[in-house]
Figure 1: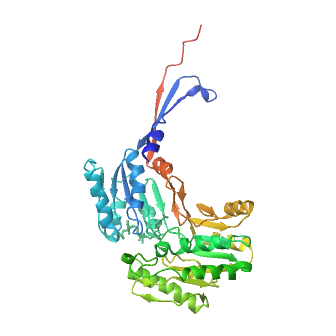
Figure 2: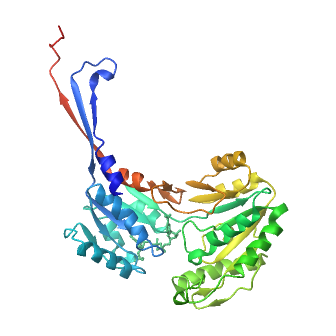
Length: 373
Ligand code: NAP
């Protein structure tokens, strides 16, 4: 951010009017990028520090001040980070941290006339905020239903490793987690066997024991996930493991033979439960992906790069990964969602651009009487 800030903010433009047909050289235009003022940053619970600094860095380097509203689950980490900024000598008021439940203080902050831009990461709350916020720039990074399309020629070991890492790390509580596998029927049995074997090796328990799968964030999240699992069970999905839950801890579960009439085919569980839908053509996979309300990321596994690029072009998502699970970052890569997955684009350069505005000053000269010679 520091490096990019120096480059972008140093890029003032100087234009003259005679480059536009019919104009004489009577106008000189000076253009620069100026800060917006106060950025309101609202990160989600799952990355309360990382998704705060990805907003704080660009905001400050562009010359803004910032109000941070941390997630209630994660507020302690965010407060500690802001304390570190103050210890490092940040002037008072450059970053203010306001804690409190979003449902109670959210409207006050997001509709405050002193806020000049909102950078939000979270769920559907972002859609509601975008309807209430006034004429200010919005950066909304919302949920996803990232699809993983597996073609017949895919490296199935590579795909299985990425599906398990992408679907189950952080217990599935990642915006860019693999949230549905769309696999060609001819390789589905082989892929499911490989994924199942790896899921069986995941350790389950408290985070203090460094387990792979740990409790999800709240009881209501666990209840929501359970609702999706029960719906899939009623409608005939194949359970690759026994469904187990103790409090907020849900054991990793792969659901095979999921069909489009099941909620889990479309909704984001944000937990360690992954549906597999068997497809008979690439078009069927793309159709399922594009029928989603979300459009964050997607991925495709194939050895045919030409096919992969055509599929990437056809998928209505902000990013498509070829032969790797969806992921945010590296942080200077653009990161954006289409449809209900968001507005605007993150990534260092894009965030700095979003958190600045263009200011133009035009110097008008009298019609030139001065001629050479
Ligand atoms: P959330 O419930 O939408 O909350 C996100 C943030 O918004 C929290 O800080 C929350 O504060 C605050 N908030 C709640 N109500 C608000 C209101 N009315 N006005 C203003 N702020 C309000 O999301 P979450 O449960 O923390 O995170 C999970 C969701 O985030 C998932 O859908 C996931 O896909 C998405 N996510 C997206 C990305 C991405 O980059 N696309 C990255 C990570 C997560 P409280 O905690 O106090 O309620």
